Length: 161
Image (cartoon, rainbow, N blue to C red):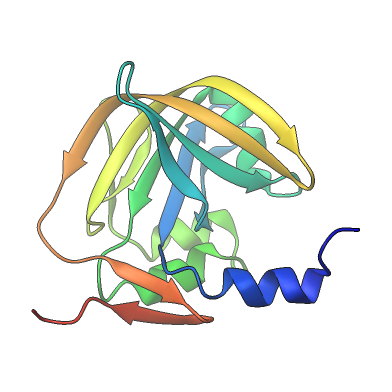
């Protein structure tokens, strides 16, 4: 017997994670983006990462169309960006209210994020309600700052050392 959904959610809230916005651009759908916390590195050689996207998320359709995406790790103070890309507003409004530029691969990059990784899709696996999308990193942009974290259902920042 598997763990209950409530117990699983309670346990996962104890995992502090960075907050990222996955973005893409395709001819058919234009700019799209969504907030994700499930993002991690997979391989150094070749440089690969993965993100997990709910099957119902429209951003996944754009990634399927373009076969490219970017992961933008949000910096401290970008909680509003996280909330905006988490839903409740349409794709146009998400980008209209967030500074961005087109990256080297044509993907929209959030210019106030801590870093952006531009990726080419190299794999996709269905797991429960989500797609695991594996991307080979084509370009990395790092910016100064500190990350915003998500822990126990709240945004946090690193403490000064």
